[in-house]
Length: 170
Image 1 (cartoon, rainbow, N blue to C red):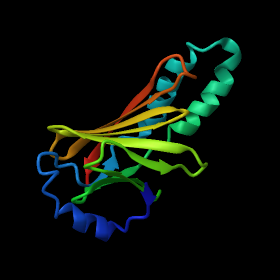
Image 2: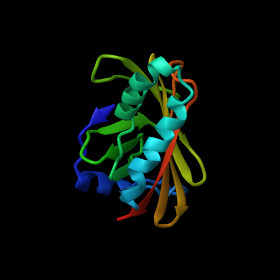
Image 3: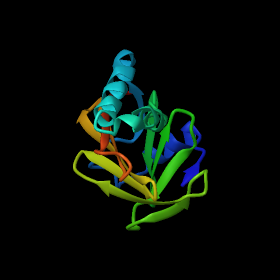
Image 4: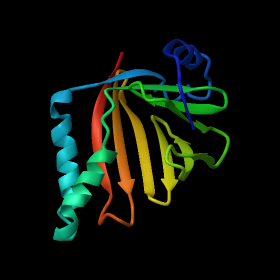
């Protein structure tokens, strides 16, 4: 699932993809208005933590903050067989377009099952493990604006943790 992507190789694959013709998300996207990003994440975390038992709030807050990594840039690409997404310099993730589910192992040895969905102006990846489910949604707002929404769901938190960030095309 994770593999390094060289920007030149990734961008070259972007221009050879007919399958993403309806969803022009491929390319490099940069975070807009990074000044409010931490406030957005803190607010989303507090909304979930406030519904936890008082004794577990500090632990819950710490765990959720670890899961809310902000990507200052996204590189999105599709090949004939897979969708790839890369946050900053972190190794890229990959899901097969044709398979209902792709299985891989996480860095800490957990089995992760991933699936890919494509719509008129969006792409979604759903990653599931025994710890819960993470849905990444990249939606075109305009030709040069992308809204990224992440939702984390787990039976260990009282409600899903969701946050949205906006990106512009480079």
